[in-house]
Amino acid sequence: MEVPPIREIVTLPHPCLTKKAETIADTVSGLQEAIDVIRHLENALHPHVPAAGLAAPQIGISKQVFIFSWNRTSEPEAVINPSFEAVNDDMTQSWEGCFSTPLAMAQIPRYQMILATYTNRQGDRVTYRLSGFAARAFQHEYDHLTGTMTVHRKDAVIRHFKTQEERQKFLAEIKKGDQADYRQPEKIGG
Image (cartoon, rainbow, N blue to C red; front, top):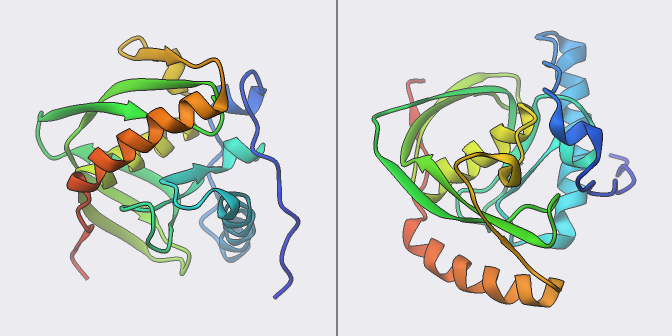
């Protein structure tokens, strides 16, 4: 299989980041298009692993596709045309980094537990119960598909950094705390 060239991760104010991404067609050719996007996402994310995920708009592709890891180290799950619903009203708040805002982080309230439904890379429509970090990572990547950036959310607390090193030091501390919130996704049905 030919490896696609690595696409650059785009940053604000790139227009792809602030518009709603297009749905992938529910066809054989649509799935192939999604698989091509997934390969680009995996290649773009690889130099940054361990990482939570990356969405197609972050590499300049306006399609409803992202990859995410429930623990920053497992093989990323491919997500096509996703939706989610909160299991209850329980919220959690934590700092989130984003490759598309390299000198800022945002503290965002997120649902603690969600039911996430999407098409996987095999073309199957699946539903998972996600909680903790997995739920937060999924919601973060989903926001990218709606054109919502963490730093633009009205409910976000934003922290700016002068250097990438300063941000990385802060993020390293956040990642240590996140480990207590790693919970493996639970498949619903099938």
